[in-house]
Image 1 (tube, rainbow, N blue to C red):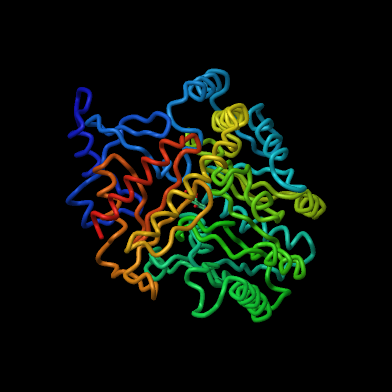
Image 2 (cartoon, rainbow, N blue to C red; image 1 turned 135 degrees about the vertical axis):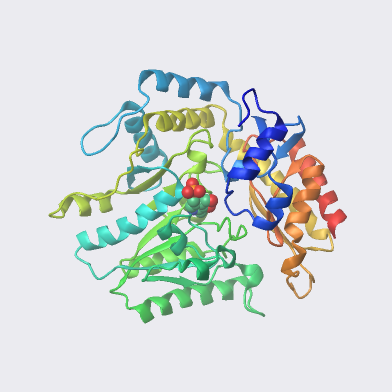
Length: 453
Ligand code: PLP
C-alpha cells in the first residue's frame, strides 16, 4: 500500500491485484489490467497519464449533463454540511427527498405521481417486481404473480432484476438465474425479424406472441410486463412502430401492470424527460429510473408509479409495502438529483439532445456505407453499430473475433471511447455534445472500423 500519493502505475497495480471489475473477462484483464481514469470535464475524460478521450459511452449511459460541474459539487457539499443523512423510513423525511419526488411527479406522464427511492436501477427493477405482485394482491388478484419480459433485455444485477432480464452473455446457466414465474418473449428487433417479415408484419407477430404467452400462462396469473422502451444493453433495439402502444393495450385488456424500465431512456437520452409517453405514446403503470436522474454524480434510483397503484395499496388491510433501503431518499443523492434537473431545465439540455442527437443519428447512419457495418440503429443519443460478416445475409461475425472490442480499442487509441458488446459498438454520449463533437465521433469511429475490418 503506497504511503505517498500513488503513481499511475501504483493505481494500476492495486486495482489489478484487488478489484473484481463488473463483467471483466478474467483472461484479458489479467494481462492488460484497467485504464486508470483520473479526471472528467464536460464530454471528456483524462487518464492518469494525461491522455484525453471523448467519452461517447457517457460513463455508462449516465453522465447526461457532462462531468466536472462546480454547481453540482456545491449543491452536494452544501447538503452534506446541512444534513448528510437521515432515513426516510415510515414517517421521517427530508427536504431534498420530498422536493425531488414532487419534481418527478411533475415531469412524469399521466397519473404517475408517487415515488419510491432506491439506490440505483437494479434495485428499482427489483422493487418494481415486488410492487407488481403486492399491488395485484391488493387489487384482489393474488393469483397474478407471473411476469412477462423480453429476450435481449437487461434490467440490472440483483437476483430479481437479472432474472427479469435475459441476454445470452449473462451466463444464465451458471447462476441458475430465473425465478419461477418469469417468462420471456421475443426481442422486438426488426433487424433480426424472421425472414421475409416486414416491420408491420413483425409487429403483428410480436403482439400475437405476447397474447399467446398470456393465454399459455393463464390471463388470471400474469401480473406484470417489463419492457425497456428501447432495449439498451441488448444492443439499442428500437421496437417496430406501434409496438409499445399495442403491448400496452394487451396489458390493459388483461389487467397486467406495464413497467417501463427507463433507467437509460429517461432524463434526456432521446430528447425527453421520459421516453414512454413522449416518444412512444404510452403511459406505463410504473417507471423505473436511475442513471441520468443524477447524471452519475451520485447513485440514486426511483420507481415512479401511478395514483391507482398507490390507492390500491393504501386501501389494503395491511397498509405497508415492505420495501426500503437505508439510502432510500438519501438527502445528498436527492439534492444532486434536484440540481441536475435544474441544470437540464435552465440550459435546455433536452433541446440540445434532440437537436444535436438528430445530427448524431444521421452521422452514425452514414457508417452503414462501410462493408462491415450491417446496421446503425437507435434514437438521438443512444446509438448502436452492428458489425456483421455479410451485409446481405446479416450473418453474425464469429464471436472469438471480438470485433466490438477491437474497434473500441482502435478508437480509444485515437482518443474516442465507445462501448464494445460482442460484435456491436454502442454509444450514449453526454447530452451536452456539440455538432463538432458529432463529426469527431463519426470520423474517428469510421477510421477505427476501417482499421479493424
Ligand atoms: N435497467 C436498465 C435498462 C439498465 O440499462 C440498467 C443498467 O445499465 C439497469 C436497469 C441497472 O441499473 P444499475 O446499474 O443502476 O443498478
